[in-house]
Image (tube, rainbow, N blue to C red):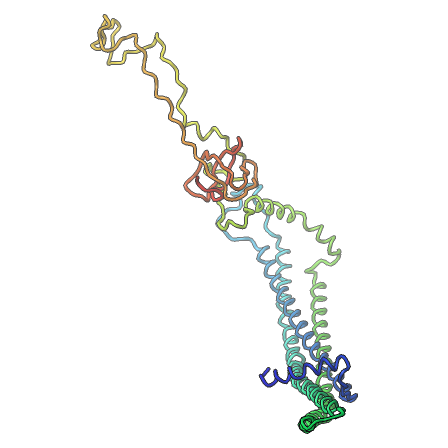
Length: 428
């Protein structure tokens, strides 16, 4: 809105409020009201037809693309994966039977059907753009110009009512002064100008709008008819090709949807449940961890296997228990000896540096094991047997760890020993 238009809107505001409360008499033109109501209906019909045609067009295109993608996805699932693994070398519990050839053939038939149907119907969908969407879009643009003209006519009417009311009030004044007479002269000039503007625009609307409405009707009716016949053509093509697909025998239609699904879901349901449980056991639930966790611990077994015995990995850290040397099997501390005690390192009178009756020195006491603790950064709920569950800020004793934080470490918390992810904790 320009500055001039804004000033006029502010000037009209008091008269609008007074008109609503009945303080100013409103000029009513029945013919204009009838034409405006008719135009509003035509405007709404064009807008709705354009929106419905666009929605229908986009829905058909989305359906065709989805069906074609679904057919390709079925083939991706059913076709065997080519790798270098010998299927016979796998355990019998690991091998999965290949998809039967008839199932693959059915998926290929459906894929080809979807592509063919898409190529046939898309030209009909393009006709919706040419014969419905584009004409109604142009009609909506023209309606916007007519709506501006009607709004301008309404503004001119408000200006005319405002100036007419001002002149009427001033003329009704009993004792008018010279200034009042000057104001009357000025207001009458404004009233004359407002009257010319209002009735000029009103005459233009009454003369041209009926012609426009007639042309509008002649334009929008063919759009309605074209939209109807295009919908009918698309539905006919869909029905005919679906009927051919059903009669080809590629799809079994002898049973209902639910019954057919229940009859075929047996093996796939068990495999799907197995995969789901595997994924749930392996994927971390915390959204704050972005890096994936290696599911093999340092013992070479999966994380979901049985828990590791807490004593097995630490047996080498402690020295064997101390046993005192027996007096009947003692040996001299020095070099060799003979049966008579005449070695060069012994003294029969006890005057030597060592004695045959002396005991071996006790071994060094075992060094105290360094205890390492970490603090939990997040909550962790064990997902498999042998996992160590903890809460944030728990202090965990580390029993076994690797150099990588993406491995599973072994620790103890409140007397419970288990495995936990290294990237869930920080060193103290």
